[in-house]
Image 1: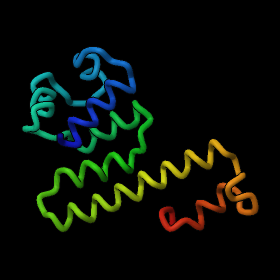
Image 2 (image 1 turned 45 degrees about the vertical axis):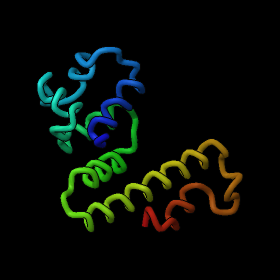
Image 3 (image 1 turned 135 degrees about the vertical axis):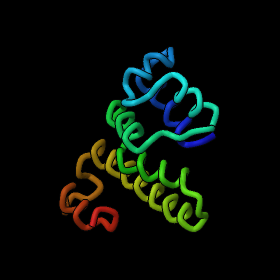
Image 4 (image 1 turned 180 degrees about the horizontal axis):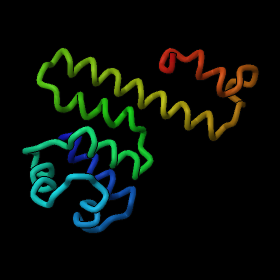
Amino acid sequence: MSFSRELLELAKKKLELTKDAQLLELIPNMEKGTLSKIKSGNRDLTDAQALAIAEHCGFNTEWVLVSLAADTTKSEAVKSVWSTLAKKLLTGALMLCVLKISGSYLVPDLGKHRFLARSRLFA
């Protein structure tokens, strides 16, 4: 399954949408035929469309754009680099969720903001 199609499915679940027509209203420059092509794997979302979905759903925008780039590139070497970066971004986002849930218990002497400044991902 392509990332574009997967993102559409994630958006429908996250926003609790039952019809594709509801999804069309949220995505800029999206028509019914274009949506069908994406769902069949014949086309991909544009960067702007993927970004709009990420913002509506509260997904990590960097992860969405990097994952889209990894999926749509033709070069295997470039795809590998994009995929690695997407995994790092997702790991960083999950780490932020853990820190937010647990407060500063995991890094009591650093605090959240100083911890992020020292992270290689956000340097």
